[in-house]
Amino acid sequence: MKLAGGAIIFVFSVLVGLILGERKRNASRECAAFLELFRYVRGQISCFDTPTKLIWRNFENAVLEKNGFLKALADAESEEIYFDAFSRAFDVTEPSLSMSGEAENLIRSFGGVIGKSSSEEQLSVIDRYISQMSEIYEKAKAEADRDGKLYLTMGFSIGAAIFILLL
Image (cartoon, rainbow, N blue to C red; front, side, top):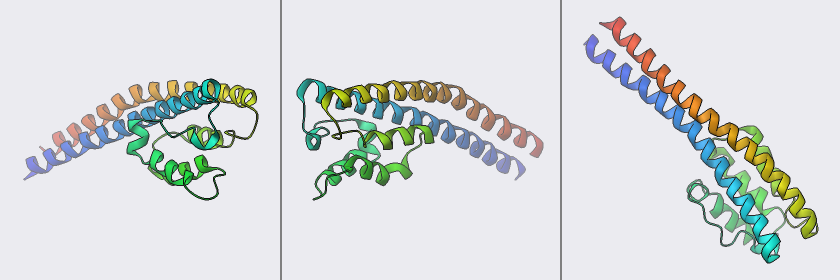
């Protein structure tokens, strides 16, 4: 009986480590997805001078599709009052995101610059957002690599220690 209990605790500990590591990797993927969106918006404004309401229309990203952001953005676009559709869409999906508060604050404020000034001013501000998001992404990626291994190692070690103690 002790052996079975120890095995269950070991497997549980390893799974917890895997889940925590995956959460860190998801945060990195989400940062990369929003960075891609920022670059897409910049391209739409600089190359096509796309109207604000049409900027997001053709953007596709599996991560943002999976967490519901793109659907929430399309829903917010279809409302009568378009002002801050990006921020409303982000508010809807924020609870399901794994990224840091710093990244969430940056993304939330990004929606406030779209369509609020001339194209040149928007591009300048968007370039700063892209730069900041790139830094956040690199940090999230490094944390995912480091912490993912740490969580797995800790889960394995704690599970193995408990298993050995129960023998």
